Length: 148
Image (tube, rainbow, N blue to C red; front, top):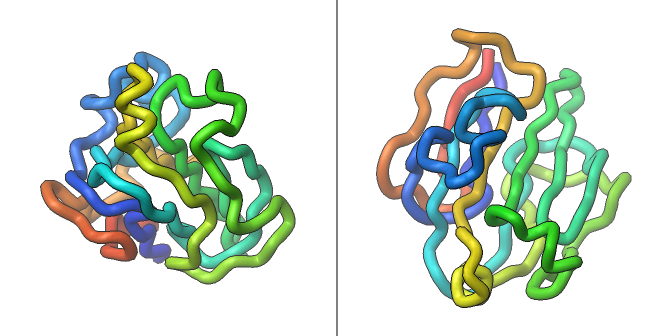
């Protein structure tokens, strides 16, 4: 059982609330999403493991059990080409759950006309393997869901 932590604080709203059809339809995978608190802060590693993909706006951490979690900071933020994001870790780094990975400010993303909502996806998870999905307010590092 893997406990996936909230990488950002805010309101857990579910993938259906993500204003992007690829995420909201679950095409990327199962999980949830967080409408983040506005203001500067850091997104953290949702699980302990190795950062296998690192972009300014998104990262994937794979645990020792092979489970990978994608954190995507905002919607259409790839178009920003890194502007407004500062990496605090690098691809290939080992991180502990809750360790800061990217500094960013959701209010800046929103001011630029993009949604700051953050999908958190359990890559390759099968139907029924995620339980205890958080609803409502979550703080950074709170349990977001369990992955069997």
